[in-house]
Length: 159
Image (cartoon, rainbow, N blue to C red; front, side):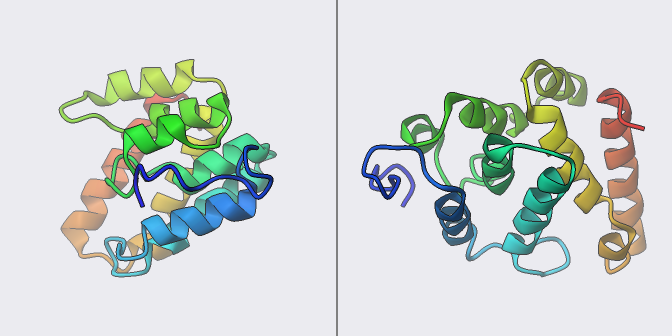
């Protein structure tokens, strides 16, 4: 799937509709689970819903569905560059894609400098740090992730 260039909007050249982005993201992450063993698509849905609830627009919701796709190698960066998505959606996905060896401060700076990315990252962090979601993890993992998410929220200026 990644990079095959066949994923286009129903009109044959327009931008992918949100339902198409969702279906694409679900297929791309189909074999993946989160740290608790849950289907990864549940996280993507929660982030997309969080963006919507925070007043995000369609480009941000599309980016929410795809926010981990490149980082997790579910879709390639080449696929993203060629995808029938707006340049803003692509920029948000790339801003949210962590790079190997990248310090958290550099990552946070890129998120803050990319218009629309902060809202998506806020929804991502909210779901990642959900106490109910963290409760199923072992104590050391839960503590490590809680610190990690709190640090990122502080770097991003989120209360």
